[in-house]
Length: 147
Image (cartoon, rainbow, N blue to C red; front, side, top):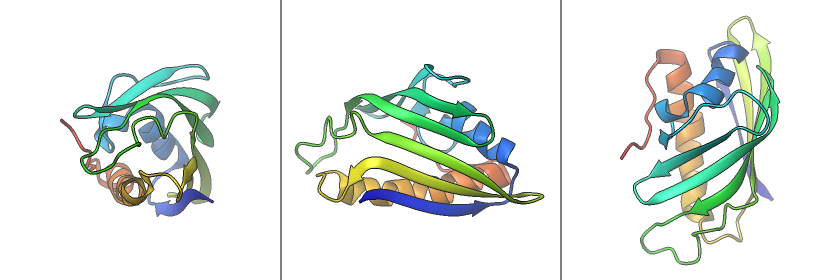
């Protein structure tokens, strides 16, 4: 089963969607581009690690899907993880809960417990999605890994 999580964020669906499409570097990592439509691409990196994504679905303020089209994942002590994300889908689905509350349903389709990187990717996504992204939307300050 692929990794999923859900988080309630004090903010509008537009604020959350903009954070995911326009401001990834404010809550996740160094990012070379913002995205605004299907087919757009961006790369996020941590030190010598990077992931390149192509947008496969883009429904403003509702849903965005990033397809990992290239990966170079380097982490000391973890062998065979370099290309594990390639072909996986990072899916963000937003639900308006109240006037200023959004439920974010997150799934990294293809990030399964059998992958070598799962043991480090699971807690990393928990931190970046449920803490850093949430903090960025609610306070303007996230906790990205910038190098």
